[in-house]
Structures are given as structure tokens and as C-alpha cells.
Image 1 (cartoon, rainbow, N blue to C red):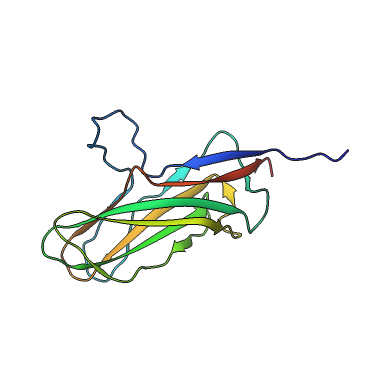
Image 2 (image 1 turned 60 degrees about the vertical axis):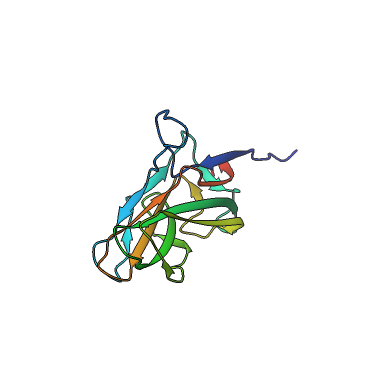
Length: 164
């Protein structure tokens, strides 16, 4: 009888907070602030690293990850345009863009929330395993400061085959 690998589900919340707070006051994990116009600024990497590791869906490429990422964006003043990017990678690997720089959108001094979702993100050689890293980036159309942050509701999930 052939041996079958057992898949384990995983769910990664890159905007998670580590403490209990009053409802409606949760702040995000990854956050980035722009300084200069038309330059991409990235958050520090948030790594999903459970005790067990393996390939996503047990394959070198073509595994499926689903998810939803919400990014809060706010300008220090005025309404400069912003662009967002989302990248992932195998731990210490090369970054893979899963959301290319978006079309520019007007920001405000009131936080705007942009949500991006996919039922089937296909993995590639540079992003096919657990553990993996995650980051967002933001660009401002002017020297006005824009702050972008990953919201606590964000998640990426799938299945991995441990030891592969």
C-alpha cells in the first residue's frame, strides 16, 4: 500500500496583535511610512514560522493559497495619490509580488481601507513553503507622508505537507 503524506492546514495573520485590547481599538502589525515621492517603502518582513515546515500543497510550484489582505492608508495632510504592493517569499528567499503596484488612488487625512482577496494564489519556486515572509509597500505621489498598515483582519491560508 502506498504511503500518503498528510496535509496540515495553516492560517497566517500578518496584521495580528499579541495582546487583548478593547474592541475597535486594535492596531495592526506591519506598518510603513513614506518620506519621498515616487519611492516604494516596505514594511519590515513579518515571518510565518510554525514549529513544523513543509511545501504548500506538497508541490514545488502550483500550490494554492487563498487570502484577503486589508491595508489602511492615511495621509498626513492633503490628498496625495498612493500605490500599494504586496510581496511574499520563502524564508530568507527572493521576494515574489502577489499584488503589483496598484493604480494610484487619492488618499485623505481620514484612513482609507483597501482590501485585496484571492481564492487561488498559485505558488511559485520562490514562494512555495512554510515558513514564509510577508510585507507590504507604499508609494506617495508627493513629499506628503502616507502611512500604510496591514489590518488585523488580513489572512493567508492553505495546506502544507510537513517534511517535504
